[in-house]
Image (cartoon, rainbow, N blue to C red; front, side):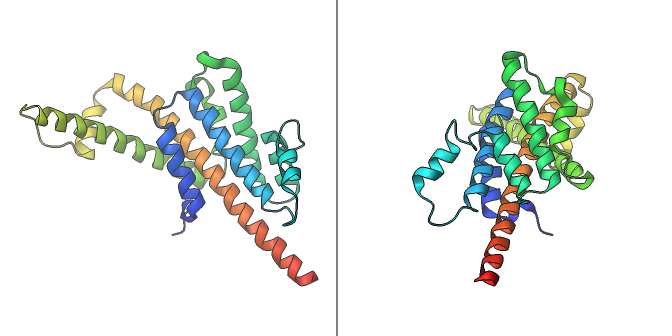
Length: 224
């Protein structure tokens, strides 16, 4: 079954976000994730420019105070041109709203205070939202499993007698009876959901860009 992450650029985006945001603060996930999405939007627009457009014009368009210097302007134009779909555009708007909140609340920003806003970014349909949660749970547990087994290896290397390696089932059974850990992981799950949702939105922009470029080229060929 095909995935949005089959595209090499989408895979690279996902890898970058996981590597850079896994240990970020709630606010950091929003700020850095938004910057990555802005790059995707700019790439999508640049792909539609005429081939002989001067570099100085391209730079002026995207540099402040150029007409496409903001993420909002980029997203609006991509939607107006029919390059991104309505669900992707709505997710971009939701991300922008949350980014503005994060920018103004600074150190007070907590994802659990804006859970509904976070979920709006996943608003690419019920199937996508469910997939985001499943993948988030998988990545969260894998990260905890790696940490637990890494700790065991360090104890073993120091000469301590340790138990057998943790498994996913063993970890789940251990956490189940620990309310404090469960609450902490629930917060971390929201963090991972947001990270993955941002990755999916970026991947959708990349795929929409490629479809638009193919469409423009076909139209250009038919009118030549």
